[in-house]
Length: 154
Image (cartoon, rainbow, N blue to C red; front, side, top):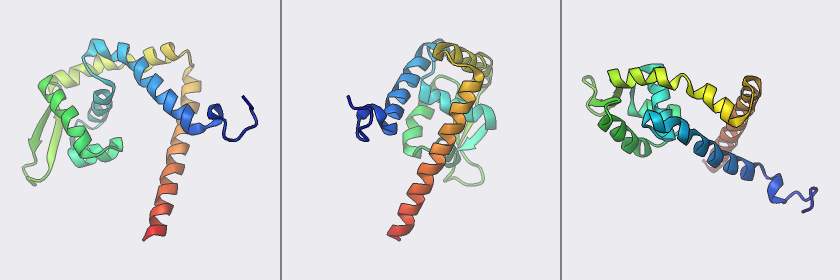
């Protein structure tokens, strides 16, 4: 392997992010399994714990997902008794997702997840915070790039 080759696989940010993403999701599995939720469901629950109630469109925006991707996750959370779906009384087109008492109670267990994950990853809180800041800059840069591409097309 030539460490100076700009096309070396190991030097590619996209490759590192793909491998890291798969590894992180796999590392969460044994931490979330006792709670009875998957990593995508955990992300939905994080948003609900923060906001208590969200319409589907807002939840999709917060999670940077399509509403159609979230619908099956939310149905499973509802079947587990952790969330409730209902049409908005003020606008039938809006689907409101709210926490149930069981969903709210699960937060107590979830409060240990960040601590356990830091331990599993062998990283300090400061290292994880620095990584998080870098990831946010990366997300911002990728969005700006997409926005610029869209502006050129229109």
